[in-house]
Image 1 (cartoon, rainbow, N blue to C red):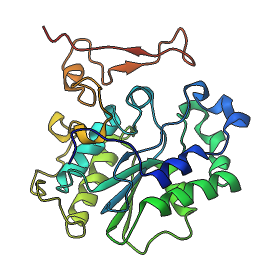
Image 2 (cartoon, rainbow, N blue to C red):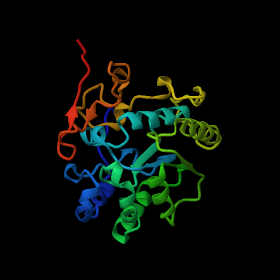
Image 3 (tube, rainbow, N blue to C red):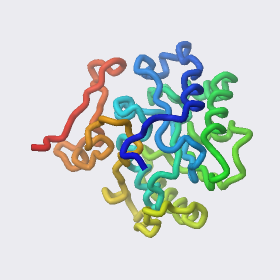
Length: 258
């Protein structure tokens, strides 16, 4: 496996280029930053498909989804299944959704142009090796329910990694891991015997984003915010939107390596 992601297959890249316009709904999204589409394998070899809600500021910098704090939690989830690469991660929306406007965005999921584009994407990236689907959060569940042609594999609907109900989150993820371990074949270099979730989410439940999921040239610490979670004051992401300009400015913080 290459030590960086060279990008999507040509067929999928052409489909990404045809993403329907979000212009009529720009007030619901961080629209000016453009779309972020995926992370993982898009060549129909994934054994697990995961759908989340929308990319965030770290994802915009990385050009890949589920890279920040939430993504590192999801990577820990994958690691407990012994998956190091055989997964595909996408979102209900291609653009970053403004959380306070999430409910207003729900009708967009069933709008015909958005629905057709998203379902075609899901069909392009899944193949006969798929063994399970995981939907993280309400927006992802809604998108999944609108996929009429989804494969006949087990589906798991669990809270989003940023859930405000930590006990519900960890209890649901623990049960999902228990069941998925009997379904999903681990990668040869994976370890499906890692400890399952305990009564609360720990730093050991995170995992850094593999280099093979990120584009060439990103800093070696991108996708591993353990340093920030240990910093004082704590910050869970290296990229943030400053309150002085939420729509058009990102602040990217690097660890002090010296």
